[in-house]
Every structure is written in structure tokens, then in C-alpha cells.
Image 1: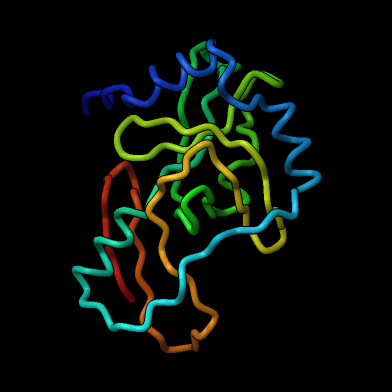
Image 2: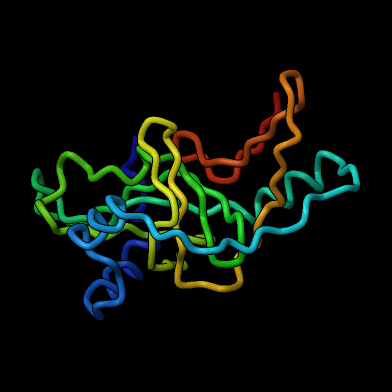
Length: 178
């Protein structure tokens, strides 16, 4: 198969890194080690039932890609390696802890954690609000105030429907339930 075209966010991340607008890997390691305890302005819990297509649209709007823009030790090029995350507040994203573990092939200290909204909008990470490797959870404050968060609830039980909007195997915008 033909090689995949470069991610359009790669050039944007490069510009932001060169302008000093991204948090570097060393600083980010310190943020992970000492998360801030800041208020998160969550949306109220939704009370109206939604149709599947409405759930998919909310998930699509809240979905972001989270990962590393980094300098590779193997090929000396810069790469963008991103997985999924969700806006949980207008300036806050949740993802899995393992998503922002430093890539094994990243030149030491030569990388930047990034959030990507849409095809190419790169948003800097500004703080870590929660980090738990054992629970595989990470909560990040970002340099945006207009994300489209999903409402959260703790009123879930085994057997409740679950949905996921993600980008498995480079298939962008895949929605599933189960």
C-alpha cells in the first residue's frame, strides 16, 4: 500500500514548537509528577434522553486527538503520534495515561505533548490536573476555552449502553456502541 499522507497537524505543531508555544517534554514530566488541583467547570448532567445520532454528534464535537509531536531517534524526523481524548470542560481534556507516556523512540527531551482538534488545529497543553498511571487516566488543562465538552455522570451501572467515538487504525471519526 502507498504510504499515508502526512498528518496536516504535523506542520502546525512544528510552527508552534519553533515559536515556543508548546510545553516541552521535560516540563511536562514535571507537570505529570505534580498535578495541579484546580477547579474544572463540568457541564450539568444531561437529563433528556438522546437518539444515537445525537450521542454521536456530541461525541464527535468533544473528541480530540492527544499525543506527542516528537523528534525520532530512528529516522531523525519529527513525528506526530496521537490517540483519542475527550473534552470534559471548555478548557479541559481527559485521556488515558498511557497516551502521553513518552514514545520509546523520542530523542530525550525533544518532544511536545499536543491536543489536536479537527484535522489540524494544534492546542498546547498548559497543565496537568490529574494523573493516575494505575487507573490509566490523565486530565489536562489546555490553551483553549471553546472546546465542546460531553456531560459526565457517575450514575452508570453494569449493562448500561456505552458509546465510543474514536480513530481506530487511522480510520477517522468511527462511532460505535456496545
